[in-house]
Image (cartoon, rainbow over all chains, first blue to last red; front, side, top):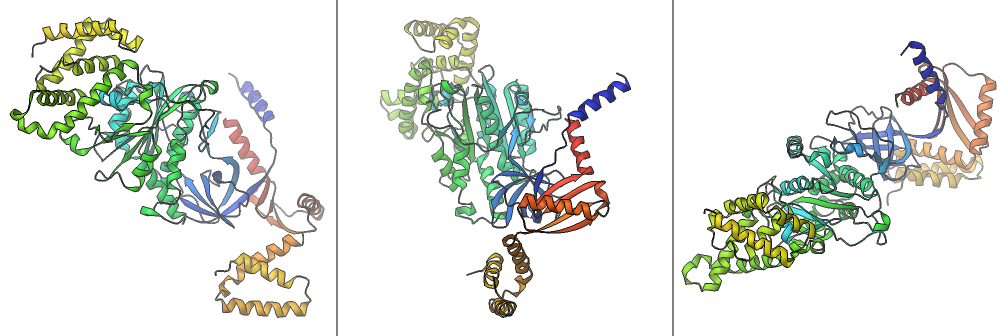
Length: 500
Length: 133
């Protein structure tokens, strides 16, 4: 390329450049601190409009008062001085959206932060958007396979559902969400993991784990780290929802994990208090309920007429010492369509995932379960409920009648089967076959401590020599008599070969 | 109840509306006493600013500032004045000329919070952003 060519190109570009001057609205910074600026003037600013400082930093107008505007600064506010000029942009806060974001780690404004180059897009979606209405929605009917036996069998999640994951710190909340993301490989689902106020070390560990399991190819990670400003933590879940909506509008299925909404509430409390909004219970502002309800309401299953896409939300809430009746947990429990309740006691007993089956519910997911799973899950739940009732008697061992003892033994094995390692999601056909074997008493004669070995061997056996049975379950999605016959034959065959 | 600067200024404007000079003096004296009674003397300068704003708005007066690299001649200022009277449907324009060499050329016109930036430096910056895309 010669010099003249470059000059020609430049001339052409400059010709296209329109130098039209517009009247702009300009205000002045009255005070700035703690990520919040008070700006005079800007009489025509809209709520949640983007404002631009002299140095290009963006702020969002939150409080519109008589003669000043309270705005939260997105990013670094150290370069901004009192008296600086602030322009209103006339645009509501929006972020770029594109397919190229898949596989990337971005900040809540859509900028890449994984060092793999800039993400360019000319399409923008507003951060705050009104959720789909009644006409556009359809009831949940397709499953999200989490790959976790206990959840897929007893607390099933459907596409378009909002299922809360709640528990104390260190009980495996994030692990469930990550396992679910890993299990979406090849399930035609785009996953968005939103880290809100998380430790950067934890985020990098999660990204590494997703990469190792090949899950980054269908995942977007949005990071508002613990060292980023509260404004970033505040907008990050809305960014996640906006990107999710972009894919949902194309008729795709999206899974969004908000990890976690307690920290989101803290960030919003901080901004509200600095903006001098009146504090309410636990010093949260009055609209803290709406903060989460408007976010979670944006997950939906759309009707085929509107593309048929969906956003499934897995919000996470961290409780303090198991207190689910605190302000934020009760709020989010009432908004969501069910919760997965994790308990520290169970976790320390070695039951992982540390699921409390009694307190966990899924209000809409059962209509999304495949028929085969529905058939075996009913009996599983019953076995477990009976076991829980009798558990106290288990210590008296010998004084029990035959039936009770059988129920206790079955319960012990059920608990054992429901244990599952992290990063080891299981296909639904495998889940159905092992649960079938369990509830029909094929494992009753295996010693409790041998169960995990038995299960591992069983799955290996099924995969290597009875593949066609698994495939049949996966395709037909129900347990027809033919499949039941094949399955029972396979289980018996394996039992004969198993050296306990 | 707390009385805001704006309310004070509005009251002062309404009290002095269509009054003779003598009457205005009496009104202002009473107004200042009221301020003192309410312990609001410190607001005086802000009230004056606000009063000016209200007075200008009601009488069609606009205050404008034009920034340029050197002093603009009378003809040019007249043209700007005419433009402003048309644009803001004003009766009278108070125009001041500010000199700032850092804008390189062109003018910046400022009326209240409206800014019309026609400076060379701004255009060059816009061109830079345009070419970078």
